[in-house]
Image (cartoon, rainbow, N blue to C red):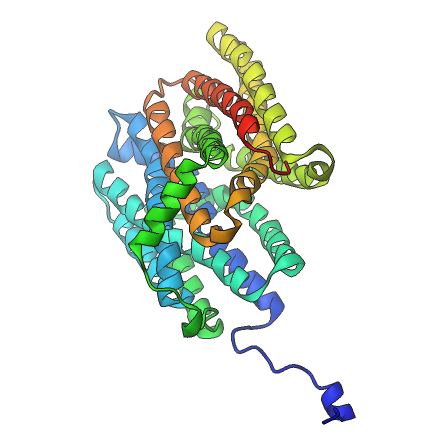
Length: 415
């Protein structure tokens, strides 16, 4: 039977899993922003929290960031496989609900231990938007269209770290630090309501996979058995370990060492924009220079710069040169993240195309938990100076450089 003109030009039936493109991108950007908002909005509050809940052990307050990240890392390994088996929306809604419960507990915490427990629960819940939102994008889009969606989402995402500390500082000024947790409650409720009311399920029942622990175990064996994947995952752990150390300690350093607590949100906004600009630069350079070359060179520069900076910190510089030194070094750390993390994720995932979903979850879990293991002792070593963080960056960059050189001997794929 030949097609009539009407059938030749008929529009394909609407996909019941889709809302409008712009609304979907905006919703995904909000979900992806859960983690950035949960970390960066807390940074201005850390000195106040320390003064109230841990006046005799200020270094403990830095765990407010790292414990959240630890919960997120553990949750990553759970949420990905669960969403494959149960569907995306239900896991996302339950994760956001757990995030809200953790925020409510944090608002009422009377001890630093209680606050850390609440932040761990928050991190577990925040793992859902981190992992499942990416799976929803992949359910609906692929190839260049998916790349376009993610580029727009990440462009919107860049502004969250830039403005979140200012939002946190404004909330503290108007109320107190506990009100930041109520802002998290509002954020989680708005996200879950928007998702529940507007976004249909993207993974139909016939496409779901039963939850089989054996699959996860096999993925772990394959990932850990692949030298290149294992080494790149360790490199990412070093990079994130350095970053988490600075995230958890920067507000204390700005307040205690340089007496710039009030202006910290503005300095941090500038640092976030620096990180965003390096992502754009990497997108231009990577096609010409390659992923391995850019990442290896970046870590070599970091390691070469960190030790002289540590020496200058020990010797001491007169104000305001001491602040300019630390700010410039911190800007380099943020800039380096944009030049390395996208490339390292791509390098680690290259051999895992046949198991991309579970592979991404396992790599995300390993790099996050290992990064926390690096950042916690460095954070607890805070002595009222930026020296532990600077030395930590020197050690992480040196280890990452050695691991990159070793990985190059095992990775024969395009780089």
